[in-house]
Length: 188
Image (cartoon, rainbow, N blue to C red; front, side):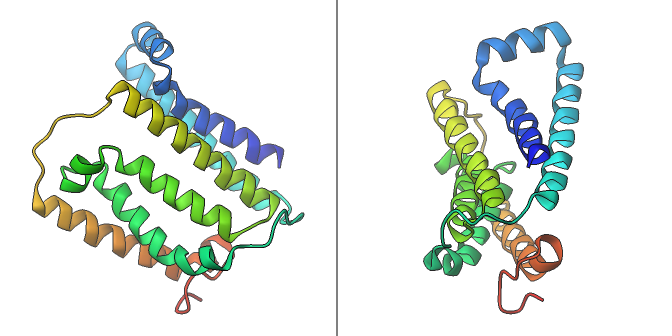
């Protein structure tokens, strides 16, 4: 469990730096753009590796609560919506223009449905941490007015929807092989 927690602290901690605008500005100024982005990427990658290893090694027990049946049934749709939102976050979509922070909203949906659909300690730590991070970052981004101006394109929306749903279907199909849990009836 310690490796999982260390990975979450590193990955989500580095992703909280932009919410601390003074710290981010000082680091950016001291390191320069390339080194700041390089260290950010390196810390993110290391944190992600530690999360994957830590989750795999953490014991499934104890179970903290019974999974919510409604969350289990809603998960495929919620994950598909989340993936569409994640895809639209880096594209010039009407979705992004309307929601302003679709990536954070997507992570909120993804983490909440996974948190409620599980119940074991390691899943609660993992998905609870992502849920907390997304909520904090969304509140901070909204308060800072962190929105870039762009001209949306219907083609970009179509790409985000098709790509997001396609990737979600692929992940759900191979969810058991990737994460040890069957997510959809056709997944094996």
